[in-house]
Length: 244
Picture 1: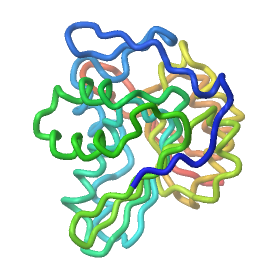
Picture 2: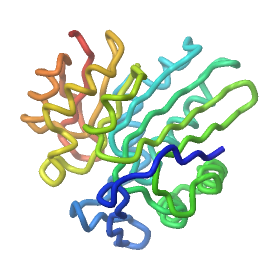
Picture 3: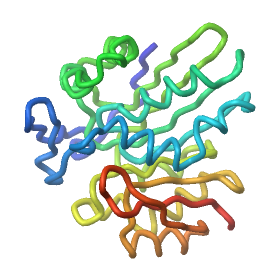
Picture 4: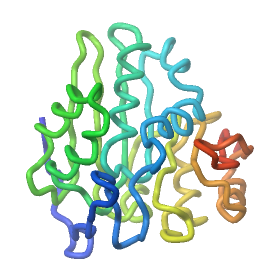
């Protein structure tokens, strides 16, 4: 099921100028950055966002688990999470995945970007086939795996503008905007304060960034922040827990 919720302003519906480098590596001309790690985007997703949030271990006892994400991009983090959820969660459990994205990709671009991982093909095909041909608004998709349910809510627009009206609270956050030096808006103190408001007590976050000002913004928002070894030669990443 795909539902465009509302129309957006001209600025919000613009498409990022996507180019391809080194074969099928998607590159944002707007932000001057790759959509995922050049070393191995999927391994980075598992190392940073899943393991950094204690996943999939936290999925095992959960009847309902909610994830928030800044930066949907190609959908890679969602697919990796969906696969981990299906393997770990109990029958009857539900995963709710809220993600915020300003520049929605078209299905063909998503499919090309995800083609590097053939073992994700089945889920990639399900996501791409349900995705709007020319996405211009919020997208809601529901996927069922037996008695398990995955609900994907893609909120289209500037996260700091659309997130305050959202009614969810996340158990875990993936902070995956483009590099802070290239897209500081996604790491601003104002936005991270809203992220904290949309987090359950004791909820967690993980991000590939260890930039000092990003860590300070997270601490100011109420998160306890720690460094961990990054992925594929990157010295540090950041994880943390909301302590109020």
